[in-house]
Image (cartoon, rainbow, N blue to C red):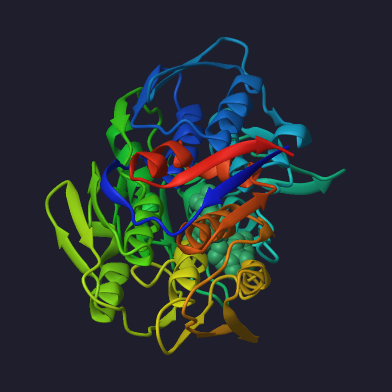
Amino acid sequence: MDKLIIEGSRPLRGEVKISGAKNSCLPILAATLLTDDKCVIKNVPALGDVSTMLNILRSLGVDTAMQGDTITVTPTSSRNTVASYELVSTMRASVCVLGPLVAKMKKAEVSFPGGCVIGPRPIDLHLKGIKALGAKLEVKEGYIVASADKGLRGSHVYLGGHFGSSVLATANTMMAAVLARGKTIIENAACEPEVVDLANFLKKMGAKIDGIATHRLEITGVKKLKGVTYSVIPDRIETGTFIIAAGLTKGDITLKCTSSDHLNCVIDKLRESGLYIKTLKNSMRVKYKKPLKPMDITTLPYPGFPTDLQAQMTSLMSVNKGISVITEKIYPERFIHISELNRMGADIKLEGPTAIVRGVKHLSGARVMASDLRASAALILAGLVAKGRTEISRIYHLDRGYEEIEKKLNLLGAKIYRERE
Ligand code: EPZ
């Protein structure tokens, strides 16, 4: 296993190109199962999770080819409907093949998914959505076995829980509904930009979806969808991670090939705190000009502050003067990074789902362990600003979700490299 070594205390300066959104392209790749035609997906990042999704697609009988950031998906005549434990258990988003398989093939056997260790991650809403469309569902030996011999039929489904809406349950139900007979209404749909991206992809394929980017989707099923070429949106979480990196290291970074459209809440919070952020059409400049003020943040469904930037923001707060507070409303247990940040000299206390962060003068390099994808990013950020050397072990999560992060950071002036443990 590899570990990352960071020699800290270097401001980041220069330009960085943001990759396509991981959480858009995973469901979009799954949605290619809905057609018999070839699809070409552009702006796809080279990531572990993308490789996993391509392996799943191949196991389901479609050919895939990746050239640069473009993936071509071509269905073969031997389609399969079983998504195995070996593939699905490594990544939560694999469950997204359930909706397309039942809709197109009228049956599916999909292993229960795995994913990052960020607290309980049930799939009851995915099952509720698919069941509402008329599929029969059973759980057998760790697999969800779904069938709809006569095809799915439109329905009215409320996809809600105590936390708000679910991103991937909305994606799964929407993908199932586009080929169902009649009209489906999804209430309490998630409207995260990645769900919108998927809906736009499905529309381009010929799906009839109204209410995109709202909490009520109205979908009129069609008989067939066609193959299309589609480019995924920039990754808002990678963008946010680099914005925070600029603030944390007292740097000056221009982010290219991205957009501020999906990050208004994050940008607003950071500007209020004193960070200079100038947004242009496809780029933004982030410059540290003065010490940042403490912040009070709560993670919420979009357009609220994203849970996927909570850990990185905590790293920034840990060196801001004063007391900052960050409350996690999506995954109340997503705080494993805190003990690791404290090991680096941070002063963070957890009270239920709230982290109280007393800013310290500086962090110091230490040996720490990454627990999940965004926690890995948070530890890298802390390492970039810490005095001395930080060693981060268990970094395999990182390769699942950040494309060439060391290369991008080194180009900005960081000193970060891999060693074998
Ligand atoms: C997506 O996960 C993202 N993953 C996550 O990003 C992200 O943290 C999350 O949305 C929230 O924004 C992908 O898109 C691949 P949810 P998802 O269903 O869809 C509860 C990253 O680091 N819930 O919106 O699985 C759940 O426990 C990853 O890139 C149920 O109770 O998240 C949570 O409290 C990590 N029942 C809340 O909903 C269900 O059936 C929101 O989860 C489904 C979810």
